[in-house]
View (cartoon, rainbow, N blue to C red):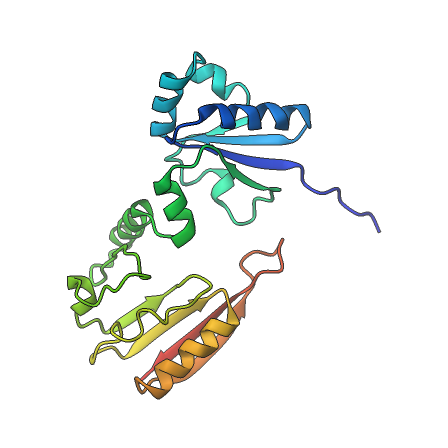
Length: 220
């Protein structure tokens, strides 16, 4: 049986933090190593480049094999099926680091809202917030939501389960990337909030990795 060669492909992100030269050196090293590079430069990253280097925008982009616009949500690198060796963000701004760490971006909220409008769904609301911080006093958290979709990080949703399921909440769909945190939070929903675990399953969303997503439906 033939064994396929491992993919030699790396995504490089250059953001607005100081240190554009680090991103330049990464691209040069990848070319020397004959590793295919895919470059994304944020608007702020381009501004920092012009302040810190004598390199033009086109010269910087010419160092990469492929260049993607930061707003191109249909780019190949945004797909979970696009195999790479990984991604290097250099330099990495505090905002970019925060978004990577929490998985929360305003652009994803806008995309979700636009998708709902296109499909004629007008009874949903989308909010972005750092759920590691107490949001119990936020207007959106105090609303009487009937149905919730929770998709927390690996640490789970323990930080919000004290206040997020309101009295009128009757359905919760919980998407988990860590079975341990799902099991813990399921106990909280069942024992403290009176929900019943109705359905549960596993979805292989990233077939080129060992990672799977668990999805559970809770009702009361």
